[in-house]
Amino acid sequence: MLCCCGIEEPKKLELAASGGAGEEQKLTFVPITADTAKEVNEDLPEQKLPASVRVLGEDGQFEVRLDKRSSGSYGFSLEYDFKERVHADAKDPCLLLSLHGGAAQQWNETSPEQRLKVGDRIVAVNGTSGASQAIFDVIKGTQEATLTIQRPKELKVPIKNCRAIGLDLAYADSAVGLIIKQVNPGCVQKWNESATSKVSAGDRIVAVGGSYTGDSEVTAATLLDQLKSKEGEATLTILSFPPL
Image (cartoon, rainbow, N blue to C red; front, side, top):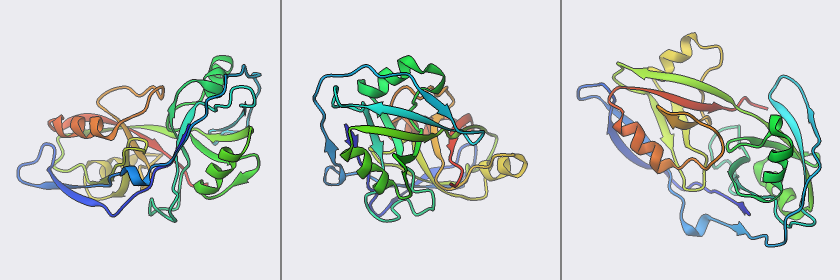
């Protein structure tokens, strides 16, 4: 199944800053409605895949070859922008939103060192790169797909004894984690000052005070509850996507 996510005009919600007294932190939430979701169902039997992979380099990229001619299912859902510049940043990622059987599962079973994970970015398919919409269209229309996958960096950012996290956030039902729209003065910006890999717009919060495995879909509602319940101390797991 392939799913799309589109982003509407943001709604604003003010949330008391963690660990602060009276200062407020602004979180911007972007909902998904049923009208903006699109699904392609694939019902044919599954097929066993050959295990072949080619590591492309130190930039976190590798190739995955999937063939669904027997199964009819790639076994993943995608987040992509079907409206121009929906994410309002240059990254425009096509991300693995969820994994559910099919070709993806069989690839993971035969290639554990390059297993697909929720949050992985598809940067090209069958030689086509660029906008996430274009990548989605190729995947939707083909029976075989050679995916160039970029594994994001996983950053651990502590938020402790700070008056504001300093992030503008967005979310959607069909998006990976919480989308960072802007980094403002606060805990995360201070962490950036001494970090080699910095948090930036377009990165995703995928865990609050817990571990992230990449095996299952990360729901924004759960993350929001966790973020609001942490009383001034937690560690954020953030997927950071370098520009291509």
